[in-house]
Length: 289
Image (tube, rainbow, N blue to C red; front, side, top):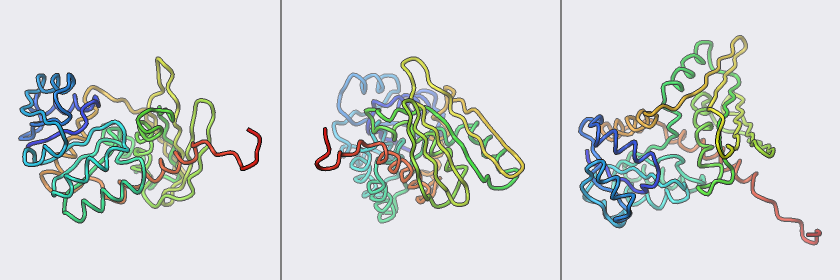
């Protein structure tokens, strides 16, 4: 399985190259090509992982690879990078977030369906062992009636604002709370943005806490039923990217996306609503400046 990577500035690429090429831990899967030209970053990745090819443009990967990882940090670039590969029928993993608008996400999904090209995207937090523990413990007393997830996120991030890190707590919350998204409300203080909404029959609250220059809060999840409360702090270890990568490799081998396409859209729906609520509102015409 020949993997190509588009957008290599993301540190997740180090994990992917290390897992597949350095440690040979992905079966027959191997990163064989990087796009973006002969930058210092690409030269370092190629040297560390024995990557065979560096190409200038994403389209130059066509014919060289069997599947593609889109790893640009800014989700606004993901649609333009992913669609040409989906159009050619290649399996694509879009690193978080899938997109920064529901419209872009729908275009990618529609293209994948039209060309029978498996597509997936997720936060790495969704797949880590602590997330599995939280999901399993939460299911013991039936579907949670309420879910509260907290984590670091900076609404002012240069990589798409709340989308860049906000995808982590939202994706986890929605793994715990299936169903249609309704009634998203956003509240803000100097350091925290809180999104509250209904997913199916579950009330969900997601707290995005802005990191300071030296520290950030851990990711944390709580679920509630009539009789129980479950909570879990989620820790990202040195292998935190591996479970999501393995889910992608499984998709390439079987042709079956690990997450339904409706569930790819739901976190983008929430984050798009939050991002819209955070935008400065224009003053009414005639109002004093």
